[in-house]
Image 1 (cartoon, one colour):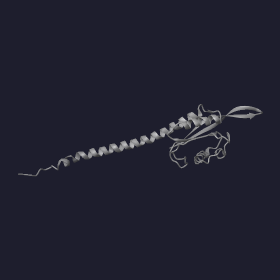
Image 2 (tube, rainbow, N blue to C red; image 1 turned 90 degrees about the vertical axis):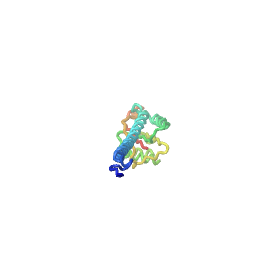
Image 3 (cartoon, helix red, strand yellow; image 1 turned 180 degrees about the horizontal axis):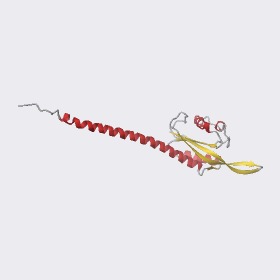
Image 4 (cartoon, helix red, strand yellow; image 1 turned 180 degrees about the vertical axis):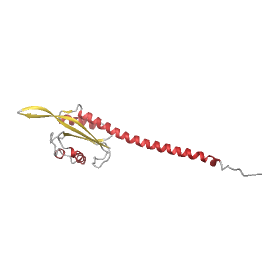
Length: 185
């Protein structure tokens, strides 16, 4: 009797050469699937921020003419009642102003140091007593920070209607302005 069977390793040993490529291909498939899902989620968050910015801007600026501070403030209060997925701040600056301090203005506003004086410092003033500013903070969201890497910003050209007295007569004039929006998580 001859008990030597050449080439037989056992039930698992015979299938091992075919199991290794299957395991490697499954590992590769799920790795690529996970990477793709992460990229999709990241892009989806960026798109939702853009949608929030555009929605807020459309609601605040309407047809790109801000008639007065009261209507702007009413629109701001109406927007705050909505539940947006991101926090945001909106400021309207005169088009002739210096925009180097925009981010610092938002940081000051986030800390509660916001005042009309530092908001309009170095800019042609619309109204120092009533700056055009709107802030919404999502529940559980952190304050805006200049160092925050994940904030998005957009700028929209608009116009602001003002009442001016010229030669003893009251006139409405339209001044060019810029609406700056910052959105963060």
